[in-house]
Every structure is written in C-alpha cells, then in structure tokens.
Amino acid sequence: MVYSKRYDGRKIDQIRPIQAKAGVIPNADGSAFFKIGNTAAYAAVYGPRELHPKFLQDPAKGVLRCNYNMMPFSGMGERVKPGPSRRSREISMVTQQALYPVVDLSEFPNAVVDVFIELTETDAGSRCAGICAASMALADAGIPMKDLVAAVSVGRVDDKIVVDLDYQEEAYEDGPVADVPIALIPSTNEISLLQMDGEISKEDLIKGLKLGQKALKDIIQVQKDALKAKYK
Image (cartoon, rainbow, N blue to C red):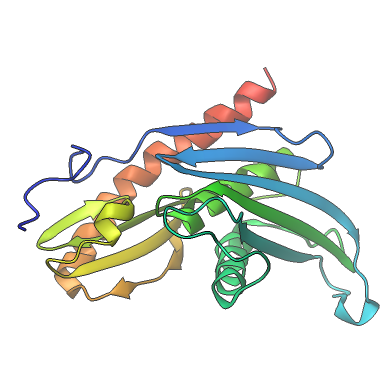
C-alpha cells in the first residue's frame, strides 16, 4: 500500500492537537500535564532536597534525576509490564540529558531534584511528551532555568518526511520508516536531544529537522501559555 497521505489527514508538517496545564499535582513542588494526540504525560518535581546516600552528592551543584514510566494500561497494544525496563531506563537517561543544559542547580550543592514522568496514554512520541511535561514542571517548581525545552519527533514514512509520527505511522510495514525524536532549546536554537530509530538519508534528515523546528516553536508557545495561565 502506497503511503500517499497521512492516516489522520494531517499535513506533513502538522502536529497532533496539544493540551497543556501546569500545577496539576498539589503535593508536588511543581507539576505539569502535556498531551499531544493520544499521548499523555504527567510530570511531578520534588526538590531541591538533600541527596542520600551522601556518596552520590556533588558538592559543586545539585543533581537532576528523571524517571520515565509508562503505566500498564497506557499502551496501544499489549499491557505494559509494570516496573523499570531497559527502555524506561534509557528514556529516563535521555530525558535527563535533554533537560540538563537548561537547568542551573549551582545554588543547590549536595541536593537532588527528582522528576517523575508518568505516561497514562501513549500513541507514539511518549519520550517527547515526557520531556515537554518535565520542562514545564521544573519551571512550575521554580527551579532556575535558562529556558524551557520542547520536543517532537520527525521522520520518514515510505517516501514522505513528516512531523510528529503517530503509532500507525511508526508501524507502517509497506516501506521504510524512521523515527527521529528531537528536543530544542528555543533561545539558543540548540538541539539537546537527537535520536534515530530506522534509516533516513542525510538530506531527508535535514528536511525533517527543518519541519521539526517549525513544530517546536508552536509547542514551546503552548508550554509558555500553560505556565502563564497558572499564574494569572
């Protein structure tokens, strides 16, 4: 079957509908909800607080820890096995690395800031939704930050270069598929996350990144609007 148009009718550079809200978990120091299409992420921030055990402490600055988790009922296919997995540990690590460039914990030596990301519903793009939610939650917690971080996937489905792949596109079987999650720091235009699953040419990757930059500008505005709405 030729992939002539997107299954949900979107344009190649069109992201799925977004919902975002800050301050959704009362007991957290900061929190946020971010939903794109049928992928929904909650993020809760706790800290800065003293890090234990002490041998993990950094006397020069605080430590950022991220924990990504898909709830058992959240997947599009079979039930997700509860508890940490190799995939969740990998995404936790890349989420931390995507956020570290904007977080300034120099005023909090020997402390830790924990970010817990829970995916309640997933239809592709879960790590990007988690990064968007976590970035907002850190800002909501008042953690010193240089900027927010926005994330979205770009990629190739057959011969089409598209933005924000959904589950059907990731699972396309009649041609090559590449999924490239990216995260952007808008103020410096630096990419803090770039991963790739599948094969894509250099020329198509550049096309995808250009499409992604436009989509990320829209996403960052949604994040900012949600944070402003909380403090009106």
